[in-house]
Length: 444
Image (cartoon, rainbow, N blue to C red; front, top):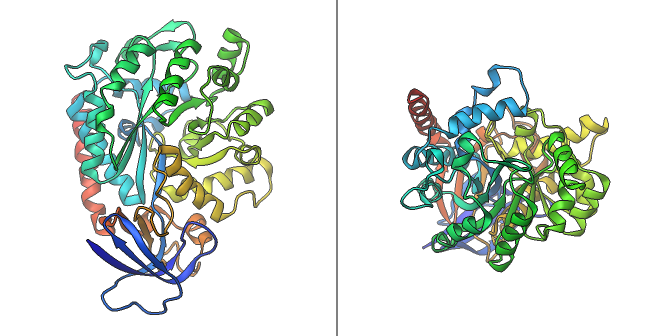
């Protein structure tokens, strides 16, 4: 299949926005990219507005989508929020998980995300008994992503305990394989699901939930299979305190000593870091995935994004708990949070944030050929309306995409050369979410 588009304005993955871009797509990839074409050529499909590459949601817990509007009703902390999340986790089975994940992924696709990293730890039946297929829940996630139309990196998570030196408790038994060797054995059975639209990756939930020797097993598996490795890191001060008390080192140093930090590693949140932690993550050329809308929703704090960048780490972005699903809000929040913390503007350029949200994000998930509009890349296009109340008058620029637009301004999403979402789908996506989430809570 060959398709040609004329893009009124486009950010190609680097530099400034350019006008009059013709792209030809053969199969799933760009075969031609021409700039400076003033009018659409014959037969080309016209995309008015501003088009950017597909965006990557690098940290997702799909089932958290059912918490939106509920966990915000009471005062509390991350730890009180977690109890509400556990209550939800306790009532999902593979069928319900599939329905919720599919609906959540449809929302992400409509917002402009063409790939998602699913940090997946809801593995087993209530009580911790494996399903007949021990990967039933993970396969439900993969099927949901494929049916929704979004690529997925299934970051299968090793989650063994309730805290340092404490076994799994309550609903956490659903998360645990008992030890990392058993986790790895189960993961081996998932490898056949990998393909152009699915990466089978790895994750360590946290240094609280996985002891150092078990982290070494996960890191070794990831290296042997050249797989992404993601890990929650220093999201809460209490995690740092617990790690220091038990091991005498920060979580970052513990991960480094366990061989878990490297160029395929993504540390998620990385909110409460020492200067040495920042230097270590940069030296290891790790990715740092910030999730600003969740971090502010949970009161986590503001991470040191620019210092991490200067150290050599690479910024990526995720929506995590899906309190908000909007890649443009995640991008601008990085800069705006820095302004609040430092009382100064201009820490991140719009182009840098777009790179974090597109190309670098996809790389961190194992999709190395996505996130730029260039010959040979996978053909993902996200088009923004420049005539909405939010974008009108702002002009066609990277700054408009990052600092003015919202997911509501996305009018069309192309993934691998196929139109998979348009603004006309919004009502149906909303109705699907409402029906699925209502069923989950009505069963409580």
